[in-house]
Every structure is written in C-alpha cells, then in structure tokens.
Length: 555
Image 1 (tube, rainbow, N blue to C red):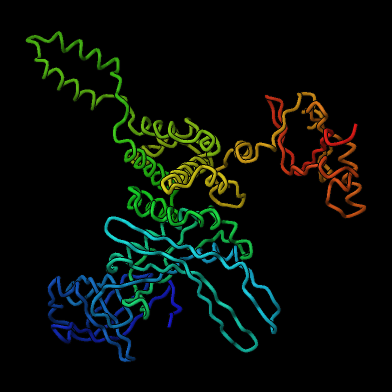
Image 2: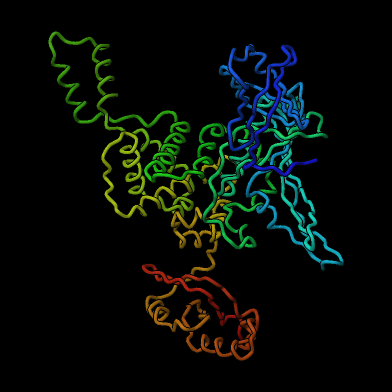
C-alpha cells in the first residue's frame, strides 16, 4: 500500500541495530526523512561501531519496538554515530531494484490542465480528457530503462465530506539489468532537473518508492534539497497551470526524443543541474548574477573549446621589436617562448566574450531579438559578475537594481533556450512557450513583445501611411473595439463611424459576431484581436481590432 508521506516527512524512532554478519550492535535513536540527513546514534558510551567499509556499505537493519524494520545502506560511521545515505522502510537484503516510482512537486498541475470531471454528485462522475501518458524508452551507454507517467487517485470519507485526492507520478523500469540505490537517486534528481527547466518551476522530489520485483514497493529515504515555499503561488489553483513555461502538449508528441536527448546530453550533469538548482535561489542578488552568468560562461567554454585567434596588441608588437634588438640575440625558439608567455599574460583577449559571440552567431536571430539581451547588457553583466567573483567594488551604483535583475533574467531565458536546443525542441516551440503571458520568467525578462508577435503572428501587422497612423493615434479610447477598413487597393484606414456602430450595436443586441453587428457578409469582416499598425518609423499597438475588407463587398 502506498504511503502518504512527502518531502516534509521526518521521523525519529527508537531502534535496535544489527548487521547480518556481526549481529547485534546495540540500541539507539534514528532520525530519517527527505528534509534531513539520516542519522542513527547508539546509546551510552564506549567503543564505536566496529565495521569495515564493505560492511557499512552492504547494509544494516534497524528494528523498532512497533515492528518497523529499516534497511540502512552506504553508511558512514563516526564513533557511535551512523550516517546512512539510504534508508528503506522494509528489510532489504540486496539493494537492486527492477523499478522505482517518483512523485514530483508541480507536475500534477501540469497534467491536470488536460483533465476534467463531468457528471453530477450522487449520480455519476466521469473523468474525461484523461491526459495521454508520457512514455520514453531510454537507451544510454550504461543503462536501458523506461520512464512512464501514471495516475494515482484515492477517496477519503470524513463525515459529510468525500474528498478526492489525485496526482501523477513517474515510474522508472529497468529494461536491462537493475537499478542500484545510487542510480535511483541519480535518475530521480536528473529527471527533476529536466522537468524543472521545462516547466520553469522547480519540480522537487516529493517521494520515492522502490521495488525489487515490480510489484511490492517500499519507501526510500535519502537527504534531498528542500525547495523554499513559493510565496508568489497563485491563490486561485484553477489557473495555476498557466504559470508553466512549457505545457504538456508542447512536448508529448516528441517526449521519447526529449528524454533521450536529455540523458545523453554533455551538459546534463553540471550545467543543467545547476540551472535547475538556481530556481531555488533565495539570497543576495549579487550571487544570483554570479551564478547565472558563470553558468553561461561554462556553457560557451564547453561548447566552443578554442576561442578565435588572438590578434597581437600594439604593446606585444612593440615588445617583439625590442626583443629583436637585444644583444646577444635570442634564438628563434627563445623568442617564440617569450612572446607566447607575454601573450598569455598581457593579451586583452576576452575568451568569454569571444565565445559568447560565437554562440550568438549560431542562434536564431528572431529568438535573440525576442530575448532582448543586447551587447551592452552582456558587457554590463559580465563586468558585474567579474567584480562579484573577485570581491571588488561594484561599478554598478544603483540604488535601483531592477535593470540588473532584468538582464539576469534574460541570461536565464537564454540558458532555457539553449536547453530547448539541446533537447531537440525547435525555435517555434520555445517562442510558443514564451508567448504565454503569465509565465514568471517571461514577465521578469521584459522580452521584446512586438518582435515576438511579429514572429508568431505576422498577419497582425499592417503597413499604413504616416497620415493614417496619426489618425489611428487620435482615435477615441472609450471604445471597446477599433474598426479598420482595407480598400480595394490594399490601403488601410481607421473608421471612427464603424467603431461607433460596433459599440452601439453590441450594447443593444448583446451579440459579439462582428459581421452581424455591421450587417456585412461574414467573409468581409475579420476579428484580428491584438494588431500593430506601422508606417516604417513608428508603430501603434491596438487591442481588440476588427478589419473590414472592401474586396469582399459588391461594387
């Protein structure tokens, strides 16, 4: 039976400790859970625990008076204190597992977006639009396994209330060999990183259950980093799914490839782990700058091993001239060695900047323009990172740090784009995710909204004359909808009369079908929604726009 503990779970028990070969080791107290380091302290004083490293690793048994049996593996020992890396709430002799199941925070809401319950209480309730399971067959150099999502639902009856609890978990099943305890923890944490960056919210581990035979499971405890509470979480849970960067529908058709690409990625172990971990950062803003900019530096250094050839500076050229005049003259080999050393010490070449430029040259220009990280932004944040790293006085004086926070968020957004590229997700998927208005990362990055709309919705942009644009800017702002007319030559102009007509007719009839309000053929009237009008020098954005095309009207 599945247990209902989570990442806040912590328990202390009185136990008797024993080893299968050595026998009884004494009594003591053990504290374990996900939010603490497991620790067992034997009672009294005297000699410490005398076990070899192999015996400590292979497993000990802690048995409580209430019958609870805990298997302890990969232990470290200090005198009479034991620190097990893993605690399993059942007696396990061989720590090899056919499968394990992990529950992650935030992920259930990601699935629930596609779920609905229909029917009437007391009659019949039916789940409709059940989310399609996410399944991936992963093949990496050292392991083959399957990852699949599954639904968990339970009813609780308390007095007049019957409560439904439901969530989603992921099951990892070995298709070749077994999982060791270290592999269970490693795969669980790495998959947490994948979900965290995709969703734009940290998906921490809530619980892990392991099974040796794929049938009976036991709860596994190990020390995990606990995410801080999300103080900005919406109080309206019905809309909480909108906070995610990527939606499940964005990746479900290519999920197998996404997961395989992630587990094979050269950036998985360090860079993506730390990008996901930085989502938990709570502290001084300078160190957030240090973290994200250093991760970008690490990415470009790993991707572009060698920077472009360094051009000799004027000082180095002068040094070469002076060295040639030295008497007795240096040999060609000596001269080359001296100039090489001088180049390494005194060259003004900036490896980070040059490799960053190489990266920029490989990326989609539309995506870069939307992310809106300028060269000046990069130079500012790089200089600030270096000053923080070396404990120097900051050149940025403030007091308003908002510009620095925005640039840092753009660096985060760029790293997220690089993550999408690494998983084989194209620019359209990334821009589609970025177009969702309520995502925290998008809001905090102050993206180029006009270019984002131009890239995704080019038909919402209209060229007009300077006179027409001036008339548009002088329109009445009290109207709920602005109407425009495109004549038979393609010229577009604002129509105050039609805008007033829509306003009056909608109030009188309550209709929202604009062609009916205007008494025109349906094909001649288009609701554009958000539209942009530009004359080549200036641009005006308008919400709720209707376009009448005279080409569809009789002469």
